[in-house]
Length: 94
Image 1: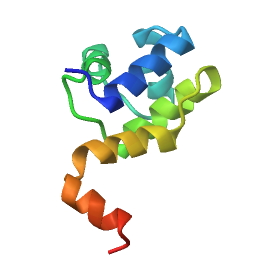
Image 2: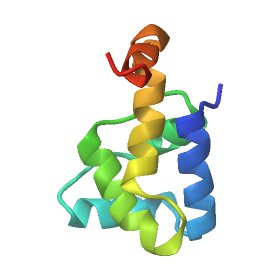
Image 3: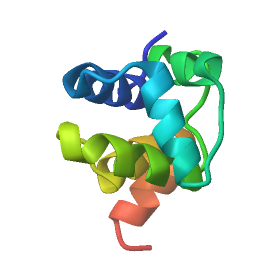
């Protein structure tokens, strides 16, 4: 069930050596709250990619200790949620 977004996020979490609890606490310090269950579901692909606010907070927390960036998370998110024909039209400059 893993998606490219889920793989990207999970790899960043593993690379960071931070626990879900620590990531959640650090995101909460940045004004973005969510549960450990939600983070787990994002990492396993059981939930669709989150809002941009959550992605920004995750990137701020994980980027100092992993190779993840907000741009990588956002690109993976939008590649998953935008229909293929629309992505093709965007790529073609329409």
